[in-house]
Length: 152
Image 1 (cartoon, rainbow, N blue to C red):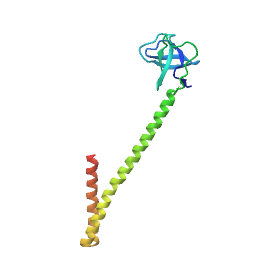
Image 2 (cartoon, one colour; image 1 turned 90 degrees about the vertical axis):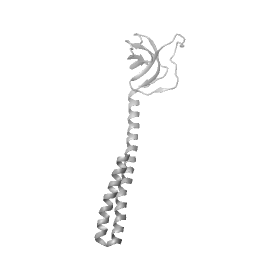
Image 3 (cartoon, helix red, strand yellow; image 1 turned 180 degrees about the vertical axis):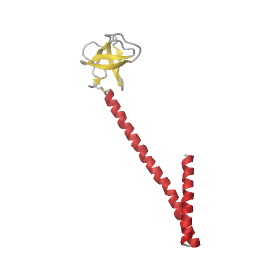
Image 4 (cartoon, rainbow, N blue to C red; image 1 turned 45 degrees about the vertical axis):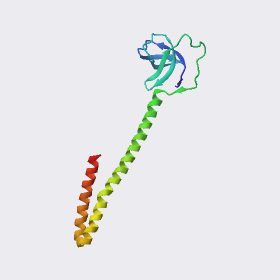
């Protein structure tokens, strides 16, 4: 259940700094904004985090009467965890895509150098030297790839 910022309630037991409050007809986990609060202290909800609501004691100059409706609906701890889970999944997918692009780029290096050395080998001595050039180019490209990988 969502609790709006500005909702009023009372502490159930001591908040030192964590405990429970009774607000809008339900019990909610809560944390005192500053210090400790005694049992049955009137409180005002000022925020929330993944562990519960954040409250402060109701001040003497706070208007008495119906709850203040600031229009801000505070997400529940489960909603905050779900949102952070989605953000983490999106960041992980972006990292995977970047890694795939990085490896595809780096895997091209040995094949380009192998093809270049194969062409030189074919020009210099025919089919046998083309195979030797291909092998030599693949090895040099792999060494270059290893140096790039270790340098970063």
